[in-house]
Length: 75
Ligand SMILES: [Zn+2]
Image 1 (cartoon, rainbow, N blue to C red):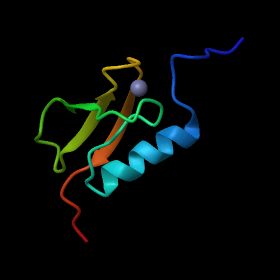
Image 2: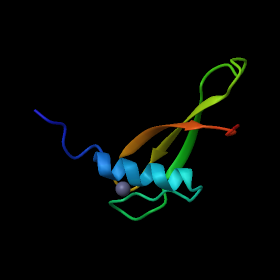
Image 3: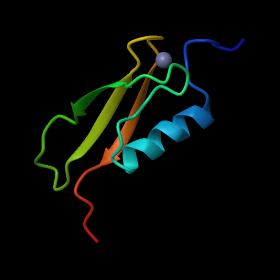
Image 4: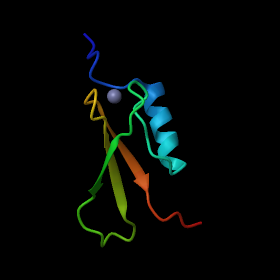
């Protein structure tokens, strides 16, 4: 059994992630509408590095995707 219809495919997720890393406003690959971005803090910020997750939700088809986003690239 597969869960169909409620999730993005891996290819679609990849496209959204690319938009995120390019600091573009992510769009739903299915609806072509801007997705709502909801940052989720990883709890405490006293861990040396602030790891944050971005939760992207499409207001139209209600699909959502969770991404690990590294903040403040230091290298
Ligand atoms: Zn959508």
